[in-house]
View 1: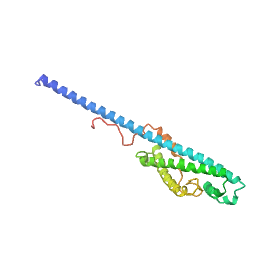
View 2: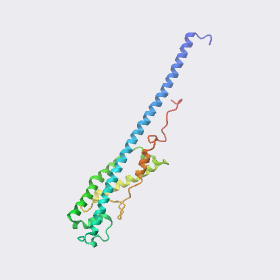
View 3: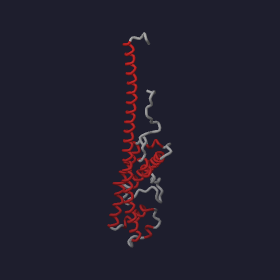
View 4: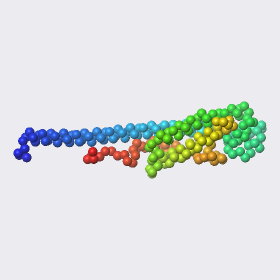
Length: 228
């Protein structure tokens, strides 16, 4: 080292410090980029999950209002002196009862039936179409079916929901547009035309929104020093 010119030693040291600085800067920038991507991914997935929750809430409220009206109409028909009880005997569920009594409806009963039918056509159908479109655009949550926690439960419920929606829309197309006697599209009633709606999905969505790691997959990890 005694034979190395002073100017050369200083130059080597400067170059070494510059190299170390460059490496540190690269590592820090890589970590910052990863953190930003991680944050952005989580925000996007949270936003989509909030959108799913909104659609599920809309469908739930619409369905509950419709069922309340259907119960009211059914009770009115059962008490009505103008409707033959033989007509309703053996009916399989609300919609079958309404279809049988349709030609005997009073103006008030027909109005309530039209309200029930309009909820199917103008609230439930577009909501279910939007839910199915949401599912088809999802590239993250349905892929978490191997997860042992809430994301795995949610993934399985989303798969069940997709089947339910496809069958619901198929029955709607056959059942509603060309037959004013029908007002309801039920899949898990007495007729068993399809599969049930996965009611537990609301709880899974709520729990998923509470996760701090929603934006991370099991393969996502922060960049490590020395592996650039």
